[in-house]
Image (cartoon, rainbow, N blue to C red; front, side, top):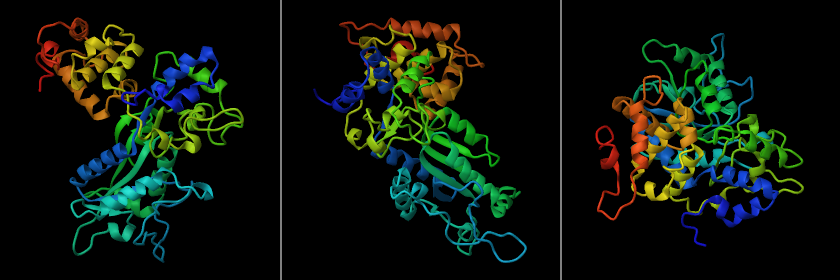
Length: 413
């Protein structure tokens, strides 16, 4: 079988992993596996580079990679001698520090390499992990007051929250933050986030701006009933269990995302932890084997998500084939809203549509009268869904992109 359009559950590795389940558990395991968002390393690097380039146009960035901090650490530990606690030093936190003395470097190595490349470019206004002396104004330029923490994934949010705590614990940073004319801005740039991790970071007293591309699906929200996935992860949890993660992943996050450079420990351990009688899909949390696997076709992916939203008519491949990518995203989002979902973060997690596109489509839906101010679908919105389900294949020449079929006003570009 060709790899083109292959789902992970259909791959050789996926089939071997599924072969460990009892027959009655296989359907649930397949649904869990095909809900996994797999991100190629090249795709991750490209988006991070584009976002940093875009953000740097709004003012010079100080770039820091996500890494571990001790609970009571300062972000800039060196202080000027004297009574005034003024942070000094040209260098900020090291970009890479192996976890708990381990010789292995995690995803921070990929991020560190990328940030190093971007900081060398003359067309990007950015400093690489600068200390307080380099953030202060000098003769050739003003102060750098925009600090960006960059990572691939916000899972439980623990590491980034500790980094923010370390910033707050640094008296100099607090002084910059409270400056009247040029207050400090803190950005957290991540390719993906769990819903809980994002909420936790947004609640920090530094008030960081969280910029992400995707909200990762989790075992708690890929389907209305989480019980089958919860039971599956608990029943097959590898023994001995991982020190830091329960059956649903670190912090019970239950994220269903993996990258070409690794699977986060916030995913259920059945995906990445080996046991006496268990072989994981991502051994040692490595995603290298899947980095070259072609992703499923967009039509199949949209169809699967629509089926999960109990929209079998719209999930018909022949119907979806009549719509372009933009229209499919609009259909999927409108179907999710009709299913009772309101919050944009949960909509992004459930549909797989990018966060920025979710916000844009919600604005368009409100303008068109398809959803109310409360976020609930309106009678007109339901009518649009019914109209989409009636777009059947015919022998006539009609546009492949059905924006002109049932998005007559607001979704025309």
